[in-house]
Each structure stands twice: as C-alpha cells, then as structure tokens.
Amino acid sequence: MSEWHDVGSAGDLDERGLLLARIGGREIGVLRDSATGTVHAVRNRCPHHGAPLCLGTVRDRLHGRPAQYVAGGGRVLHCPWHGWEFELGSGRCPDDERMRVAVYPVKIESGRVLIDA
Amino acid sequence: MIDCDIHVQIGDREQFLRFVEPGQRDWFREQGALLGTPGYTWVHPTGFMRAELEPGSGGMPASTPDLVRRELLDPYGVDLGLLTADDGIAVSLMASPYRAAAYARAHNDWLRDCWLDADPRLRGTIVVPAQDPLAAAEEINRVATDARFAAVLLCGGSERPYGDPRYLPVFNAAAEHGLPVAIHSGAEGLGISTSSGGAGMPSFYVEWHTLGSACSIMSHLVSLICHGTFERLPGLRVVLMEGGLGWLPGVLWRLDTNWRGLRSEVPWLERRPSEILREHIRFTTQPLEHTDGNDGLLFEMLEAVGAPGILCFASDYPHWDFDEPRQMIRRLPEAWRETVMHDNAAELFASRFGPVPM
Image (cartoon, rainbow over the protein chains, first blue to last red):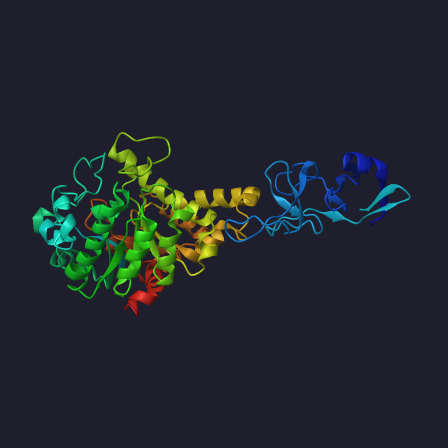
C-alpha cells in the first residue's frame, strides 16, 4: 500500500538537485529538472543494467529530419552507464518498449519533499 | 528462379570500345585488359573464374550470351538473371571522374545492346561514376528509361561510406525511378578507395576475400541507416551483394544497442536500425558461409534478423566461389526455398521485372 514518505527538505533538493531515499528496499531519487523547475521521483536503478539511474543527466530528447538536431522531444533522464533514455514523466524508455523505470508521485509541502511509494 | 548476381565479362574489348565516345576510345584501348579500372593488389592464386568453364570471346568465360544461356540459364532454369558488372564495378574508383563517366556510359550501352537484347531473361544493373555523384545521377536518368535495367550498381570499395550526403544525388535518382541500389562488394582498397577492413592493407587475397568484401558491406549498411537515408527517401530499397551473412546478426544487435545509447547523435532515427533494415534492405545469398555442420545455427541467427524475408538468391556465376543453385535449394530450410530463390527478388524488382514465373 502506498503512502507519502518524507525524503528531505526542499532546500537540500534545490541545493543538490537530487535527494536519495531508501523506501521498502528500493532506492528512489528525487530530481529537480533545472531547465523546467519540475520535480520527479524515479527509482534509482536502470532496468537495463542496474546503474544508479538518478545520477545521470536530464536532457531534451532530440528529434528531427536527417541532418537536423531539434530539441523538444520531451525531457528525458539519460542513464550514466550506457546512455539509455527514460521519459521523466512516465518512466518509459522510448527506444525499447520492454524497458521502463518506476516513477512516483512527488510533492513539496511546508518545505518538505514527499513521495508516494 | 531469379539469380541476382551474374558477372558477365568483357571478352571482346574492341566490341566494348565501340561504345566509348570517340575522343576517349584510344585512352581506354591503351589501358590494357582492365580498360582503366583499378586492378587488384591481391591476385587470386588460381584465378577468379571457375576453371572448367568454356573460354569464350577473348578467352574469357561468361563473355557471350550464348555461354551464359548454356552454362547457367538453361541448365538451372533461371527465369530472370541480374547482370552485374565485373571489372566495371570499380569504375567509381578510377582517379578521373571523366574517364569513369565515359566507362560507365559505355558499359551500360554495351550491356543493353550486347546482352539485354540477346535474351529476354537478362536484366541489367546501371554502372555509375559514384566519385562524381551528379554525373552518376545523370547517367541513371539517361539509362533508367529502359525498363530492363533493374537496379543501380555501386561498388563496395568507396571513398566514404554511402550514407555520406555527397552520395544523395545517386540515391535520389535511383529512388525517383523506383530502382533499388545494389551495393556489390569488391575493389576495396583499390584505386581511390580507402583501405579494406579498417586496419590497413591485408597481405593476401584470402584475407581480402574474408574481410574486405564483408567489412565494406557492413560499413555501407551502418552508414546508410545512421545518416537517415531511408528517412529522406522512404521509397528507397538497397540490396547488399556478396558481403557474407554470418556477421549480420552481430552487427545489427550491436547497432541496435548503440542506437539506444547514442541516439542523440542521429536523432532522426525514430526506429531501431534493425526495423529500418527489414523494410528497406535485402541481401544476396552468395557466398553463404560454409558452417562446418552448423547450418541450423546460421539459419536460426539469420531468422532473428528477418530471414528469409531479407534474402535473395545469387549464384555469382562465373566466379570461382559460385553457389550452385540446386545445392543452395537443398541447403536452405524447406520453408525458405521459394522465398529466397524467387519471391523476395520478384518483389524487390517488381516494378522492373513485372510478373516472374515461379
């Protein structure tokens, strides 16, 4: 059964860009996307090879016609090991339908970061 | 049965030279047997041609339509045969693009008049000077009006892999005419091409034949996909010839894996490379690797990347490493036979071949 967990202060999240918490045996990271200001909670384990996914970088997914590099394909979390991309909102890997990372509801209340996991 | 790789030979050089424009004829005559195309550094130790074939015009096997009829088309029941240049495949590697363009024009006219007119079962491939892509496109436009030409022929040896945008005029012209582009291994490391295999020049023909021809085909395959050639030209089909097949699953798995991690370099690829391949690329079968009793394993691996739908039979007559059609039929899994020996090529070249009997 899910419940809201306090994983740290909003101030620490702003300062470090990332909070890590262990809940029910799973490590979950809370990231602030510095470009959009949105906050996301993502399981810190890449489904591909088990990398600490939340230590990767948040980027724009690129698209475009050949020879064009167009931003705007959505914000993705780029795994630090093999570079696989996961959509921040859904946890879906757009390049492999069999791969998905768990994402969780997150909110900030009274200066505390809460995730529903 | 459709044979997608028949190497007809220029036996009578004076007959060929009649198709060269007068102002360049003497130059080509003075170049000797290869007519100015670059020669192999690694000579086959016992000869490039099957030794038992009847010498024809100029002492060359497969140098007249009658020989091809008697030695291949009639005995094996070939319904359609695609003629691929032999030495002429290396025209793209001649130093002079102007000589190359003249050679290509002559080869295409020679093929039309001396071969395609001689037997209704024969179809042509268009030789082009790829070192001058605009001239190559012009030649495609000139020749493609004859529906008996079924593909554009490019050489495995090249200056850059063919996904490079400099070659787009060639692929554009082919696509506009509904012609598949055949890339046939050969001449890697010759003339103005880069070295074969990526590690420098090999010492022996056995090395070149193992790696050079396969590595160039791998390079073109990966390059065409990564540059988004098929996103630019959704109607384009490419057939990769004589580069082997055993490596294909490994290269595709590797490419798919790398695409997932490195897609931001080629963000126009919205689909896995292996999916693009299944839609746009075909392979000829010869030389199908001898597997030391592991044919089942080879076919299982090929099935994982789209076989039998991606394979078209080729004999490579009259070369020394000919795949005998009856032997090939016996070797293929029963469920693959019609698909590989006939259906895939009939579909690939449908707009040019028309209906082909089984």
